Image (tube, rainbow, N blue to C red; front, top):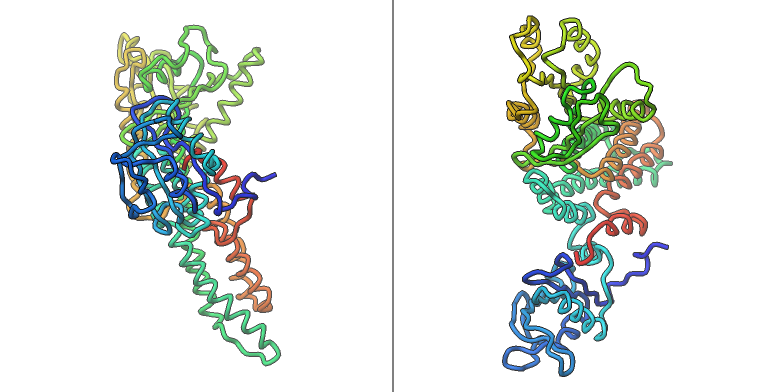
Length: 469
C-alpha cells in the first residue's frame, strides 16, 4: 500500500527538521490548520502570556514551552501563516536547545495535543499539493539538500526557482493551443474545415522538438553534476593504480602491494575539486591471461566501468613500457579516444624509477602523456588540471539542464510522439491521429511538472526525502 495515498492536508503534522542528534540548537516544524492552536497550548511568552494565536505572520517570539507544570525549554517560535508559508498552510517552527531529550519531549507534547508525525517529504508534498511548488521544483528541493558542490547547488537552486519547469510549461502551453485547434477540427469534421495551418503546426512542433532535444542532450552533463564525474583508473597489474587513487584522494583508500592482481574489484571514492565532484574508480589490472576466477570477474567489471566513465586515466609504467606497447595502446583504446563524450588521458607512472630518459619518450610526448610519480605524489596536480579543464564549461548560469532521470525519460517519450506527429503531418495522416500524438506529448510533459501525476509517482519521489522537509 502506498503510504502517501491516505494523506490529508487537513491534518496537522510535526517533525524534527534538523539532523538527529545533539547540537547547539534544533528545529521542530509544525504545519497544518491547527498548527498555531496546538503550539499555543504549550507556549508562553517571557511575560507569561498565551498570545501565539495573535502573532502576525513571519514573526519570531521568545518564550517557554511547557507540559502542564513541567518546563521543557526556552524556545524561539516563528509563525508563518498560510497561504504565505512553505506548505501553503500555517507553519510554526520551534527553535529549541539541541538536547535529544528536549527534541523528543517537544514532539511528544505536540502529538499529545493533536498533531501527528510527518512522513518523509510531507512538508514539501503539501507545498506541491497546495500549488506552492510544481513537481520538478519539489524534486529540486531534495537535490539542493543533497548537493555536495557549488555547481550541483547552482543547478538545484535554478530548478527550484522554476527555471526548468517554466520552459516545460511554455512548451506544454503551445502544444495545448495546438491540441485545442485540432480537437475543434474534429468537432467540425463533416464540414471539412481546417483551423490549424499544417505548415505552421509542423514548424511549431519542430521548434519544440529542437528545444526538447537540447534538454535531452544536457542530461549527460546534468547527471554528472548531480552524481559526480566518473573517472576510471585503468591499466595493467602493478602499474600503480591504487597508489594513484590514494594520491588523488590524499588518503590511504586502497591497499597497495607489489603483488600483481591485488585489486580484485573496483574501489570508488568521491572528491570535490574546485566545486566539481569526481568519482574516482580504481579497477582490477588488465591482463590477457589469468587463472584466478575472482581476478577474472574483477577485469570484467573494469571493462564495465570503462563504458560508464566520463574520463579514463590509462596508467602505465614508464620505466618498462616499450614502443610496441605504445602502438598497441593507440589501437586498443581508439574507440574510447574517438568518443567525444569520453576523455582519455595517458599517465606515465614511476618516473622515480627512471635511471635515464627512455628512447620512446618522443612518442609519449606526441600522445600528450602526463608523467607522474604516484608514490611521491609528483605531478598529481597536472592530472587534476586536465580533468578540471574537461568540464570547465559546466557552469550553470541561467540555462535549463536536465539532471533528473524521471524528467529525462518524459522528455524522450515526448520527443518520440512529437516526431511521429510531425511525420504524420508530412504524410497527411488523419487529424485524429495527429491529435492523439499531441495529447500523449501533453501527458508526458505534464508528468515533469506534476500537472499529470499518480499516487505511486508521488510516493516514489517524496519517499526519498528526509523527514522534516
